[in-house]
Image (cartoon, rainbow, N blue to C red):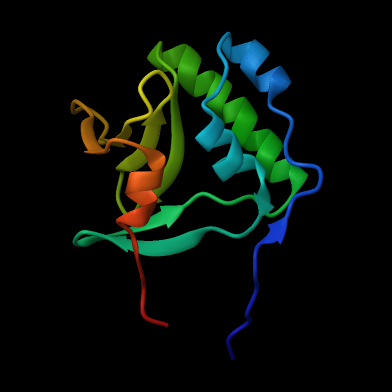
Length: 130
């Protein structure tokens, strides 16, 4: 049988000050809202011909692991890109914190722009049939 769930508003919303201090940069407001306003499970959606899995956090420990992983990612990459979704292969979706552009990142290849903003990317998604 199917278990139905709904995202739950996070109260208070996530505090990104320690993460921003560790990164040495302020995160974009749309990232803070997307990542810090709700507790939820990952959400699958259709994007063009692919299925993406949007990042969600069910509890504080998951969120803390994300923050630690983001710091490692930024230190290794040298640029602040924030992963927000993955595909069912090695590619992932990230937001370039400097420009707000949504990128499709494929290890070993140059990132390509998928949308000009997180909002535009999210609006381009379609629900998957249940």
